[in-house]
Length: 263
Image (cartoon, rainbow, N blue to C red; front, side, top):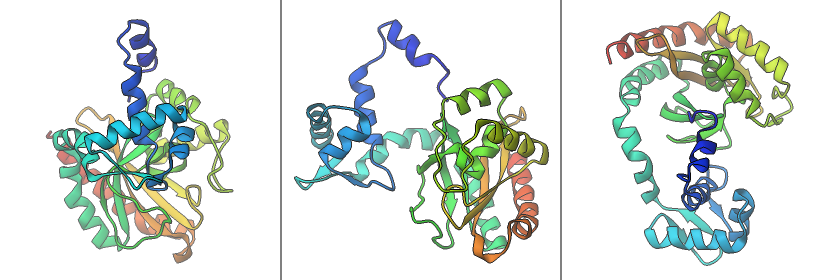
């Protein structure tokens, strides 16, 4: 995660390249919920003028990262190159994947691993069994950390000052009627998660979706990632599902931690 003030420091020293930042903002405007965007959509989602957005889109198109049908724009598979170096140097997905596959077979549900990036979680490994969300989740999918089980497990593992900084930087909005949007309530929930060692989110990211997550630790005991099990809320009440899935999650987390200590 970028250190607070890093961007300001870069700008003050004249090292911040605004055009690069804007180009990356155009790429990030596309996501699972917005795979195709018009020029006006891109301008609105990035805060750029239509003229500026058009220049960046045409530049990205000429480089092969964006395609267009003259009405809408979309990313091309070539954009995966931008994240390949990071993923190829990251041992975490390689370590967790076989554990996730075993866990998914054991619980017969979709399981995932994610890391914290700013105020979001980013999926780095996943084993889907069925689609229970309206948005398709893939490697690289991002969700706001405050409304997800993995995000809360990760936030709960941060030092208090760092967690507070992330929360204060997050626009807490009601994604569903159940989403926690009060800072005090969220902080209390993080304290509870830190004490019990796992997080449960019930219908706060999407109605009918429930997920349980546990943190993963490196050799120093620092929380570096999280894994979760996602399930439909219609298959049992929250207490029943927590009793059913949490032991398997904790065992899997402990097994992954044991391997991470060797890295």
